[in-house]
Amino acid sequence: MSVRTLAVLGATGSVGEAALAVARRHPDRLAVSLLAAGGTRPVRLLELAREFRPRRIVVATAAAAEAIRAELPAGAELRWGEPALVDAVGAGGIDLVLTAIVGAAGLRPAAAALAAGADLALANKEAMVAAGPLLRRLAADSEAKILPVDSEHAAIHQALRAGRRREVRRLVLTASGGPFLDRDPATLDTVTPAEATAHPTWNMGAKISVDSATLMNKGLELIEASYLFDVPGSRIDILIHPQSLVHSIVEFRDGNSIAQISANDMEYPIRYALSHPERWPRPDDGAASGLSGLLEATSELQFRKVAPEAFPAPSLAREALVRGNGAPAALNAANETAVAAFLDGAASFTAIVPAVAEVLDRHDREAGGTEPATVDEALEWDSWGRRQAREVLAQLRG
Ligand code: NAD
Ligand code: MG
Image (tube, rainbow, N blue to C red; front, side, top):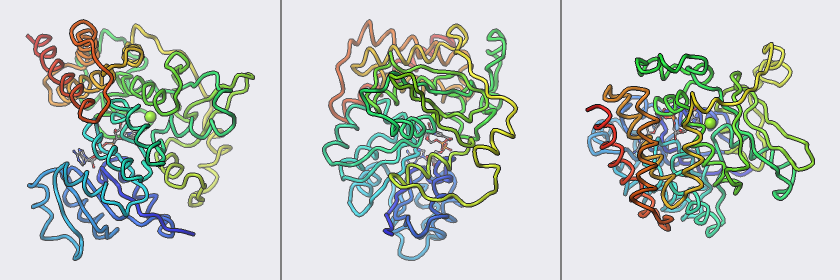
C-alpha cells in the first residue's frame, strides 16, 4: 500500500476539517504535507499543525502568519499570501490537493495544483464555475485528475461508472431545498444571516449555507457538473429532495437510472475522492450508516420539482452557462459579493438573486464577453462581476 502526500487548502473550514478527519483515519494511505487556511482560527490551525506535522503551512495574510509563528511545531515552514500558496502547491512533491477554500479565491491554487500534475479533490466549486474549461484543459495536459468532493458530483462520478459517456441521457442533481423551501417568498426580506445559515440537513460554512437558501448553490453545481462531466446544461435537471440521502442520479439512454445514496455527511464524498479509484473501508459505526439502516430510519424519500418563481437562481446559472464567455465567472463573482453584503448586514436576503440577475443582464448588454483562456482572464471577469454587483447593490439600497 502506498502513502500519498496530501495538501488540504481551507483546512480549518467545514470541508477541510472533514477531509482531515478522513486523513486521520487512514494514516497508512495519506500523509498531510501542506495545510493552508485563511488564518482566522489560529488556535485550531496550530492544533492541526501539531497533529498532522505538515512540512508547510500557508495562511492568507502576514498578520495571520505572525499570530501562529511562535507556536508552530519545529521544522514546519510558514508562509503567507496567495503567491506563496500557489508556489507551495505547484512546487511538486504533493500527490493530491484537496481544495476547500471558499470562492473564486481558490482558482489560482487549484490551477497551480493541476499544472504541477497533482490530482485535485475539488470542493471549491466556485473555481470550477469561474474557469471550468480551463481547469479541465490543465488537467488533461498534465494527466492529473479532477475528483469531485461536492456530494452531488461525487454521486454522479460514481453513477457514471455504470455506463459509457455516450449512453448518458441526463444528470439529475438533487437539492435539499434549503431552510426556506416551504416559506412564503413574501416573508423573506426580513431573513437574518442566522436564519439563512441554519441549514436543515447539512452543517456547512456560512457562504455555501446562504447559497443553499437561495438555491444559487444548485445553480453553481449545475455549471460545475456541466464542466466536470462535459454534459450540456440542457441535459442536467434539478430535483428537490429534502432528506438529502439520494445525492444525485444518472439516467442512461436505456431508461435505467443509477442513484447514489449515503448519509448526509461530507466524509462520504471526501473519502470517495481521496481513495479513488479504490474504496477504503469506513470505520464501523454500526448499521445506521449502511443503506438499510438509513432507509429504515427514514419514513419516506420525497422528490419534487423546483418552483422557478420562488427560486430563480438555478435558471440564472443555466443561462450563464449557455452564454459562456465569462458569464459564469461574472455570475459567481456577483453572487459572492451579494452574499458577503448580506452576511455583513449591508444587503437584504432578497437582494442577492436580483443583484446577480442584473449583473448577468449587464454582461449580456454591455460586456458581450470572450471565453477566458487563462486564469488571469477568468479573474478579470471575476473582478468585473464584483464591481458591477457593488454598483447594483448600492442602487438597490439607495
Ligand atoms: P468554510 O467557510 O467552513 O471554510 C473555508 C476555509 O477556507 C477556511 O479554512 C478558511 O480559513 C479558508 N480560506 C478562506 N479564504 C482563504 C484564502 N484566501 N486562502 C486560504 N484559505 C482560505 O467553508 P466550507 O463550507 O468548508 O466550504 C468550502 C468550499 O467547499 C466552498 O467552495 C463550498 O462551496 C464547498 N463545499 C462545501 C460543502 C460543505 O458541506 N461545507 C459541501 C460541498 C462543497
Ligand atoms: Mg453540493
